[in-house]
Length: 177
Image 1 (cartoon, rainbow, N blue to C red):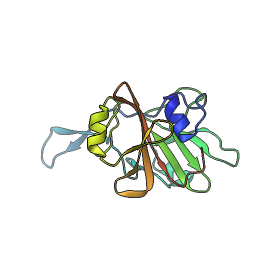
Image 2 (tube, rainbow, N blue to C red):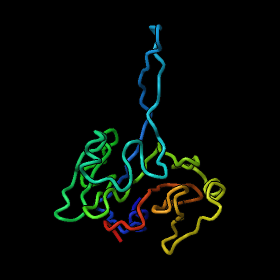
Image 3 (cartoon, helix red, strand yellow):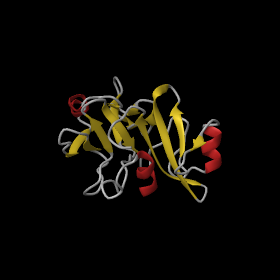
Image 4 (cartoon, rainbow, N blue to C red):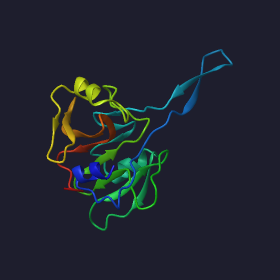
């Protein structure tokens, strides 16, 4: 994971783990029926973010979703946040929000996947099949523009032929190098 933070330019001591997702059950009453149908929360880290938490949101907008918790003040710069359902350890954050560009990045964890089905544990072959134009950067991370969102990119860390970490960030983010 420390390598992904280097790709995003994040200090490894500040970000030791990434946010994650798990399936949560809910129920939906069917008209006239007493039984409920279970529904899963979204696990997709998609073109614009995760569920109601979207890239570019202001801190106020992100807070209004009820899905995030502030973890690290920005002191005039970027602040660190977590998804409430997927808190990261002390001294780590899963989301960065910039006062200038809004929600700048979301880091994934086991259980999350891209709309193309790539997740932690996917093979490098699956990654390249899902994103035929993906390129390795100078840090050996696989980076590609997010399909459907020309303002954002995915970055994937691959070790021993498997995706070990990934995240989504705005190209114009100002929270890390």
